[in-house]
Length: 89
Image (cartoon, rainbow, N blue to C red):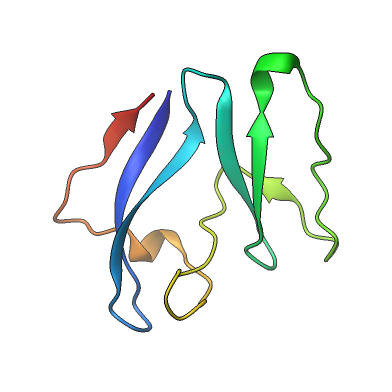
């Protein structure tokens, strides 16, 4: 089960919700720790994806990706502490 976070970009102030981790279907999105590129991952069929990004970074569950409005790299500081993080499936 993944976690749905309410994000507020500290660079431009844009607010949005993003799901992190793997849902019950076995699919999820991981982000590169260096460039923020998104990679859709289907874990239901086994480990069939490349964990290394073309920028030589790695796709990791803890990476936050980029803001969809200004493209700034996000960090955990962008998670809105006043909004609950909820599980998603």
